[in-house]
Image (cartoon, rainbow, N blue to C red; front, side, top):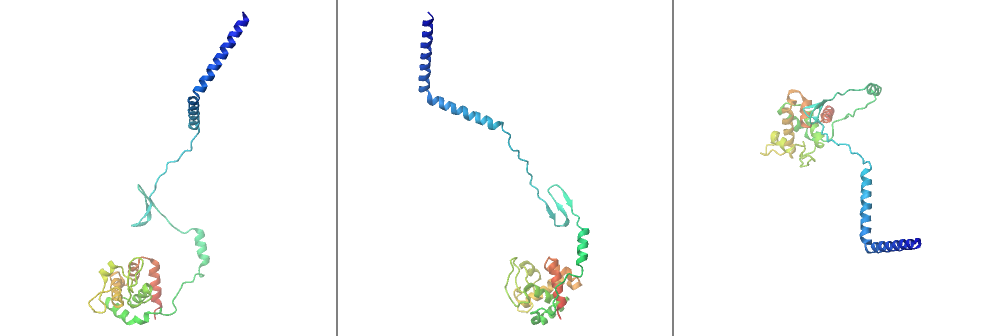
Length: 231
């Protein structure tokens, strides 16, 4: 009896094993695909549980100098005042260098202006300004060149480097030929004298006039330095 039971169990096991083997064989592709799906799902879950790098929120800030008040920074919602000064270290360093700084000086009249002395004096007398300043502007702007259509990168033209809009406002027919031409040296010098006089030179404010001619302090200093050297 026991032998029959064992024999039946073995037969049943063999049948089940064979049936399972046939099932696997017939459905191998489906089982492989399902296994791959399960693996992908597990990988996705693992990556989902990993900590991710946090990204800080970024802000765009637009800050610029207030052109009406150079000591103020202007942002979108506020203004910040600026205070400047010299540190104790800077003051000591500057004191130590005092007397060691050399400034360039012209030992004689710059070359070229001697060709237009009469023109400078006539134009300056007409507008009531120092002729040396007019001569110095001519030298600094173009090396005291004659009639020329040379233009700067900004669009200024001629011996006195006039911008077109400024020439329309202050241009003068200096040689009386009926045309005010910024590229003609006679017209340009008279036009420059007109501009400098209107900007303050006729009232003795040469610095303001030169700064209006070219908005830079180095330019004001350079022209005055050249003017002081004219003999």
